[in-house]
Image (cartoon, rainbow, N blue to C red):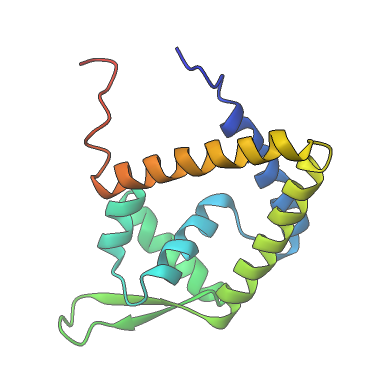
Length: 151
């Protein structure tokens, strides 16, 4: 049973729809934002690393990388240590989009929470911080500490 009733996911989906609508002219979908986000934080990463972290097929990552390179969001350069490999870097355009996306998300969340009284909002933020830190710690363990329902 999901005690949250997936409400966090539902709110995040609304924020994503709002943001995508506002950034629609850029022509990026959620999975492309996720790809760019990873590359921005891991400059010089490989397609294999992206596929592993994002749990995506290597061929799909290669196609997405080529598409994002054509759009100007990433650069794909030869790996000097391994002639067969490619290294991926984000561009200035990726930074501009990240900043725009962040501002639009902030606008949505500001609108969404503006009518919540300060005390309840502070409690809400404290709980979110707690959940975020717990999730982040679990991610560092590869989520191995989460027991699946089948076990």
